[in-house]
Image (cartoon, rainbow over all chains, first blue to last red; front, side, top):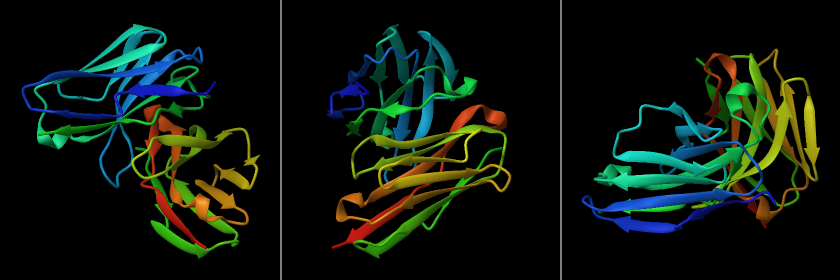
Amino acid sequence: DTEVTQTPKHLVMGMTNKKSLKCEQHMGHRAMYWYKQKAKKPPELMFVYSYEKLSINESVPSRFSPECPNSSLLNLHLHALQPEDSALYLCASSQDEFAWGTGELFFGEGSRLTVL
Amino acid sequence: KQEVTQIPAALSVPEGENLVLNCSFTDSAIYNLQWFRQDPGKGLTSLLLIQSSQREQTSGRLNASLDKSSGRSTLYIAASQPGDSATYLCAAYGGSQGNLIFGKGTKLSVKP
């Protein structure tokens, strides 16, 4: 099973709402990632969790708050977002954090977020 | 700072043609390089991963090569089909940033 599952597939929220994106993998991977992708652009790294600890935060605004409850789950909590935050949010996982070399990265289908 | 470039940005070919997609990177100290496919509005599907010690990988009609000394990778697609139409992204791991750096992708259209 090489599947990364993301929910919801689509999310529309107002600027005052609080919502969460969820990601799950059962491949035994110890590194999980959040990426943001705008239309016609490559994915941009937001956060990396390695062995359930936040390893990399790419200077993401605090209105995005990641959480890794266990080795299979990754959440992204959203609060007070701006319309420019509308994008496809992608979750990925790999055997180990890519900074250590060899891991193949597996992506989910993404959550399409629209902020009104 | 690692930079990954993909040329061309878009490519249209007739069905059945063999084609090559190009990826270049500036820092040869990479751990590996991965090719992905992305359909519109969808996530990324891993196609091939080439370790830094390897020169090529094959999967079905796909063959990816890696030349670290010249900072280049190519993805060869044999006997292209309309179902191959998608955006193809390459991403290099490592370099001084120890991070995954994506190219901007090549949008491939295979005409029936």
